[in-house]
Image (cartoon, rainbow, N blue to C red; front, side):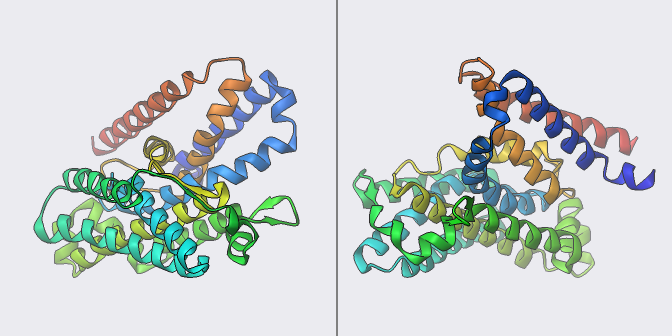
Length: 318
């Protein structure tokens, strides 16, 4: 019974996923009882999930990053332009990761060292990186069709056994790594301490500045990796790349049980939340409703999930 109470949120989110799948299978059996839709989900959901994994750690630490869609844009541009110019997608990947890490470092220094609130700092860097990418690309997209036959394409977004998307495998690997960090590593303990009470964490010897900057860098790396995967999967880079992920990622994280107040979060919940958010649009449309209902559903998910955890926290304190 104690085990169930401890993991009640994870059990609840898993039950919600099962109920939704059951409803969608009933309303649209021709879609949700066929394997094609699940292959499509494994091709698209991992991108948002990878972003959500990095942002989960930041939110647990009581921080926020609204700039990651723009970091995706500038990292994707670096990858695409360098891969085109040199013919080496691997070099493009390394440059994209370096760009993402640098963008994360900038966020960390502005928030941690200068003291600008994360929500303000990352709104500013969101505009800066998006504008930089658009300016450098002159507002034009980059075609990456020639990368489809490269080894890196097969490694990152190819099809294992001719049907299983490699991005799903990478997402699973990163999920295990982030779960280990948050639940089995001292860095995860430091992240929770900082999210609970930064002053107390500092008094206990936690290097709060170093941990927080490291989390922003990690988010930048995840943004760059997701962006490269999107570029490879779509064989294109657009100046608007990343714009559709902000709401999806936050909805997945809060639905999965990570507290908006910091100090508490779950990698498992984030992954299941990402899956739920990822299947909602297909379920809504295949159920006969307009796609315009999707944004409404995502908004409701965020408001309801945050409200539920706020009430739970208030009840726990009283």
